[in-house]
Image (tube, rainbow, N blue to C red):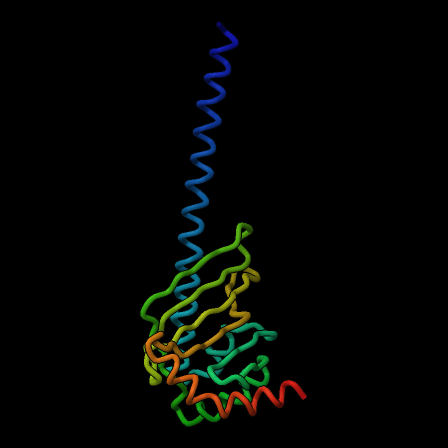
Length: 173
């Protein structure tokens, strides 16, 4: 009988500890997601306000930016070079997040996200990866895509066909 009581007490205490750990993890996840959302919102805002240094400080030195054109796969240095004239003119780009999903790895050091954006191109999709270094989230990769309604994909394929074939021939050679 005493043995059963100890087992019952152990199970109650263990269950309570497990719930507290799960609760702490959920709070930590929520806090990290809020921080990541703040980081990404500020990054987009810095582009719209042509804050070059702040915009690129949100990215790691080894970051990659993948644009909407098949040729746009830039490392950080290349993307800075491409972007500088836009920022210098005071007109970079103005992407306003509409929705965003954020996911954080179990160890809390890697995050990935997808977002829908209101842009001059219409609705676009952004997705990317961030890493946490010294308690700061930095963008490692960002991918920008133009969304295409499924009902119009055949038209878009026809429009892209010539450019795609030229790009494919360059890649294959």
